[in-house]
Image 1 (cartoon, one colour):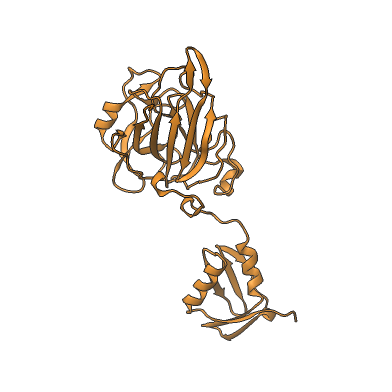
Image 2 (cartoon, rainbow, N blue to C red):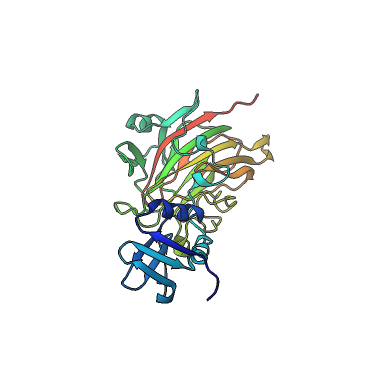
Length: 319
């Protein structure tokens, strides 16, 4: 028999099982004993039952002696695991969901109908009655803003009445899947537009990407991309039904008359992770053309259920 490490584990010894899980970065680790063998589950993936020759049951109800377990654990632990943004290097909590607006910021949505009526208008028809809805958050009893009114993109967007040049802004959002479907399943799409020009995409994974959304390679139309221009440097995905955030420092394009001398630039944190670092952005996507004029902060309606909260802008004045 090959040389192996042998452990005698009491199933009630949770401290030891927790030690194994922590040592090998396993989210879950447990055994299901049968009459003559046991199945090992690591990170909710079943490792095939150990053969009789590998298992010696000294007490069927309580104790299991395991041969050759460590290589199995090591192999499972080496597989990619779903990592929350707050567990990643470089995470900045101050840029994540719930970020407080600094002094002097414009509070554009605070959970009230008054903040909607005072600060927003429809796009592209600003004289249209606002169709978006004030609804319950999927995570608590607070009121949030839900996309509503259109079945295709670009017909029922919401844009701020005030136009901005250089600024810091913050938007919390949650993807809730298909509209009028409490399951939170299904595809969601929206976007946050700087100056009603440059779109930071909001989109849930689809197709094969749904199999491993925490590790999929985000394309130019994926979430946190500057749509069809630049993909995010990192994946900071959270599942449907969990709140996301975009925190942005935006510098408008510079002009000499009608001639652009410097493209717009932006630094973007997605869920507290910096995914664009002072990058140039040139492509307008579904809003107004790139001109010297300032523009509003826009939220896109795309026909699915996406909800927003904690929306604010702090203007940055030239010194």
